[in-house]
Length: 226
Image (cartoon, rainbow, N blue to C red; front, top):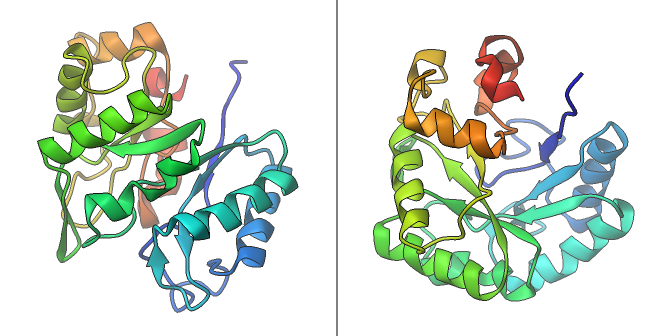
């Protein structure tokens, strides 16, 4: 049986305790949820942070408070702080966790609808994020909300604008207003993008968003399951 790497995205930026009382806000709650996922087999923790009242933030000091606490509780886990933050944040706000020199961080690969909002990741923004990660030797997890985002980031890697192969991708499907999580929307057997993913075998771990996330253990193509 192939080895499986499980990532736990323990809170995100949009959902609240009104949606689910278990959504963590405080440092103690974040550590509790990360440790629970780690003990259940998660090897990677995808980290957004909140203020204690639940407000999403990209504040460097908040990440500096929470990341070491999670790492202490989950000593072998890889932590991936988000540079996506929440819709409406500036690129400068979103880049703050990269100042802490994490081994990995997310890099969003294009603009998309996000519910009633727009999640802005234009080319200058992505180049700036790529440059920061190259300079700080940070391994990106490339977040693709649409299949065109994959084309975009592969071309950027070819030009040296973002870290190149081996590349790790995360297909975030099912966000309201963006790509629906259906198999037909993914690269097919003869697609050059599929060949790139096959060659480097850095498979996405989170295949869908919200209510769709549980379907993909059954419905995603075998080459994406690893």
